[in-house]
Image (cartoon, rainbow over all chains, first blue to last red; front, top):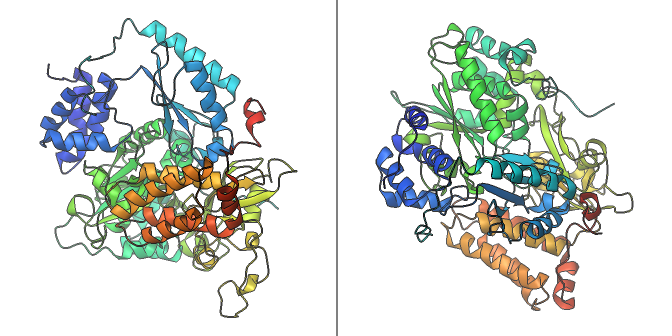
Length: 179
Length: 457
């Protein structure tokens, strides 16, 4: 089924396209917009963006595969990025990662047992002064301790359970082969 | 007397400084108004030249000189692109500007657009910085509504529009031509130079790419005058204050504004509050982002010749050399972004090498073989050394691979990988040899901080 943006996002997309002398420049902003709605850059999303900016789907797929924040597969509603670059590692990032692995029951690249979280290792999040740093969805959590991290995860897990039924995630069972 | 100064950071602690009316009550947009209504573009450019701003993105290129490369042909648009793709490990200053005083950046963009004749400006922000992006979008919209942007900013018929543009998670897009590729909607693979962006940049047009902090200094340059701004710095040719970052094993990690040309000792022990644990002294410091070769605490300046740029510091500790573009080059390192990573005596330099090499291998764009393969090789070698499977020839091999990467690629990522690797091996040669001989076993980097986080000691 062809992908379509919601009316509000469609309006935003039209506005984004006016920002550049060449519509192809809207590639990444549009992919972000679609991903916000759809959860990942599915083949349908890639088709949609390619048509919208007048390039081949191969071009857009090439862009998607280049950037780590553009997801090539469906993923759980919350993404936990643990920064493991030097400044964070000097301030205990490995302890944070080990704790996350235990608590979520998965390794980086995997998903938590309850399906609510994806765990990923991040390269430098440019918040070295607040090390150790974890990014969950759009937010940074700095100067973390394990107790603080637990509190944050509890809160997000509770919130996620509550919103999930009214906002189903798109989990195409046959997708993901492109990666 | 404290080292800290509050020019660029003057509104950092003002509550709600990200809102236009608050920022304006505290001086925002007075400089832009002055630049647009009382100065010619030439006059602005002269003040910026006199300010001696060395680009704050890491390369340290003089801002005024960069602007001077613009020679647009008749009918060509000129574009301003602001590099807010901060991601060099150890560097975290630009985010603070965008989150805490976004109007300073918008004001700087207005001044720069007027000076270089640009009508369009894109701020390329790494997408992880959601709050920074939101604050900038709000600041741009507010400034536009007030008539500071649009067809006639401050009533002057010089149209200026500013847009934010999100990255998507790629360190390489901080390289200015990779950033332009990404801005145009492609994979972030750096371009061959020349032509430089000032000749052929965004959308084929002459383009100036400046770092966030460089642009954020412009309001002060206009308010004070270029010469007075330059005089805030301690080194000739490197003017103004700048943002220093300090992270790792210090008591007070963070961002501090201080004059250009303070010393690493001042950065670590004064601004950074000193070493985290009194019983764990400084072992080494990476001075300005992870691509700048590290400086061991024991390094002493050897410059007996009077003509040597560091002769004045001959026999003194490297920690007492002023942090400048030229001085740190002479020291065998680089100034970079002044984001220092401080490491105490608990740190294994072999593990530091593995950590950094993993970063670069992950972030190499893969375009050039020496970088794509070289960074992978360095990780493989470091992995086996750290896991106790090192071979006698491995330390020499690290040097060999690094040397083969240097200067053989389109952009500086390979050099930025090889230089810190070579410095690590040079200054901590014994430690590397011992790791190979003695079968190192995954030494952790967080020995001195595990307890602080709440982990088992």
